Amino acid sequence: KSTSSKTSKSSDDVLGKCENESFQEWLTDSDNNNLFIEHWLKEGELSKFAKKKVFIEYEGELFSADNLYYDFDTNCSGLEFLREYIAHLSPTSRTRFEQLEDWESFADQYFNPFDATKMIERYVLPAEGAMELLTDLDNSVAFYQYLAVHDVDLKTNSTKVPYITEDDVHSTDYQCHRYFHSEAAANLTKESWIGENTIHVLNHCYYENVSEDLSESLTTLFTRLGFKEFDKASFISSVLVDDAAFKQNINTAIEDDFDSNRAFVEYVFDCDVQ
Image (cartoon, rainbow, N blue to C red; front, side):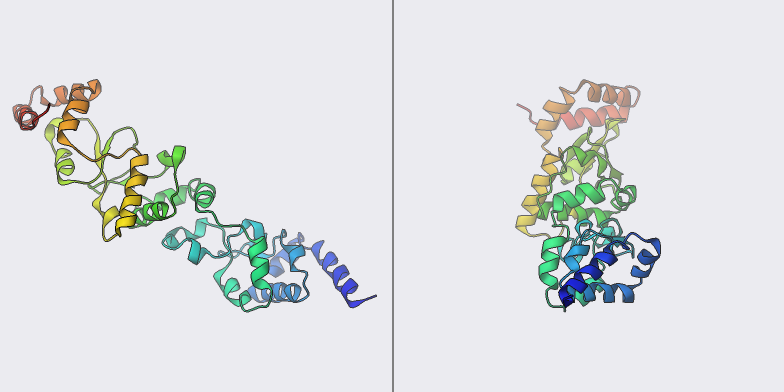
């Protein structure tokens, strides 16, 4: 038999062992794994193993190539705190294999093609641990900036993702009145006559030290999520006048509180409303 037929037969034999528990355990050792991948790549047979769990993921488990992203560091820059939730090839393996001939063409063809929206929907949104990490301001800022840069529309999934208010409160309340940060909006939330009503003002840190382009992208993103620029006249006419439940909560708050009542009257009549 020719050398190529022997190689083919050998690879077919090994393919049948890939599901074997002891063989899987052997492959989780990085040295063994390196030898395995390098051998079959050199033989031109690695493609046969692409759908087998023979590639080491970041946390050490074995995955098939199509269930791993290839280059986390490039594609998910800024989301390092979510690394454990996003299945990707071990950086150590990637760095080593990049030196090998024909590796690049294999990687381009067989690893999970990167799409930011699909990545967020598949790995991040369903993970409770990831959502918990997003209650941290620094993580939240990085996450929303990533969404803005990659034009990821959360759509119906938005209610799962917390945002951080100017009061450093994390919230998934997408029913309350929500405003972009401004001094007027932030001061409004401190008014005693607001009572049981909820008004959330987006934390200013989302926009700190960002480029004009990123600022515009962030505004587009948060506008999709129902945030509005605060305008006092509009607030009075559309919320204080038209929102019956909001008005009832105010009436309850000021009913037996002279100072709150006076503050409310001063707030309303200190504004020119057409």
